[in-house]
Length: 55
Image (cartoon, one colour):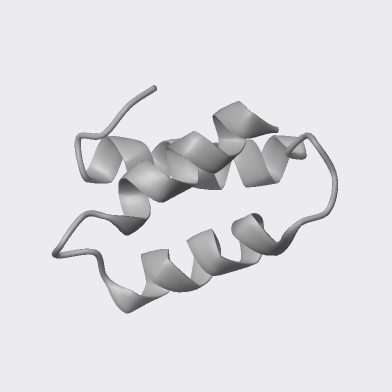
């Protein structure tokens, strides 16, 4: 769970993050489970790739 949180926080700190990406990150950050579904993982990965911020 900490790893997911770290990934989300790295992206949230990106200055030019678009609102759509912020909305996805907000949702992912509010999840109460310690894992992401396959779709959630893909969304997070796409955002990381788009902004050049990886694990």
